[in-house]
Image (tube, rainbow, N blue to C red; front, side, top):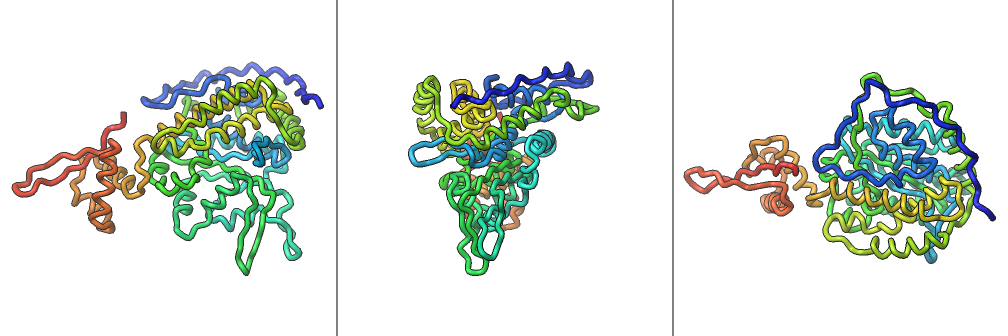
Length: 424
């Protein structure tokens, strides 16, 4: 069967960046932008058409559009690795300043677009992720007593992802293991007497928004070790320009791009098993060896599933291209995007301790630039932490290079003044 070919799009209308716009330079230490190949074909054209008319980061629009497109495709397409099927379901986390990064604005564009391309997905976009049981209930199979959920696609959008991390860290929480199984595409189940439920063919995708401070504070050594965070692509985003009067309310009007996305999506939903073409196979073999190289520290733990993420991204790029095979351009786009995700993770979690208490102390030190003595830190924490745990957290910050100690003469035993190390 030959590849399906997209009809030629209408040419985008000439609608340059508004005259009042001012482009903002990236802050010091910001991750290097992904290579242009990440903005591949149809999805790239959509993003570059939208970009001049929003303060949102193009990479935030692109990555959410990729995840949303994969969510809408469902389980009708996959790439097999041995006995494992990789469907186009991805988890992605936008990291940026609370209101300044325009994470919500970027999602608004994507939601309107994906709902126009496939109106049936609108009812399968939910928020309020708090428990594994609730997640399974939203995609449950039918039973003799319950009609279940006919459409087991689910796109979870969490604008306050810190609450998800907090919920996942509770000892009795089933959220983390359920999300891990959902990303893997495994059957899900609630094994309770009162409300048992199963979801055998759920297609769950996730988009979260969080700040760098929140991510560091709520990232624990357990989540790093159990594979929870390495199932999530971390994407740094920021405000790209100032638009005092906003941009065009519908930049895609008259371009034909929404119609093309709808046609491509309809084709992708029934495409079945995907494969690599001959040229892509050799490229993938070379890239796979590099992606499989272990990385040290926190970054190595967060990027431990680099190979799986890359092939899923390549799958989504190929589906959005209307193809039945993954070719080199799709792989190159995926590699470029994953490379940016790795740089984003290094930026977002660089120096992270994996200890919530240490991150809480660091936030207090940042709020007090002149520094805090050990007793003042204890007062800030309302004396709720044993002395041993407090010492361990302080030394973890010092070892990570994120806090410094100065001895202050007192006439007796010197006091320790702790200050946050300035960001580089």
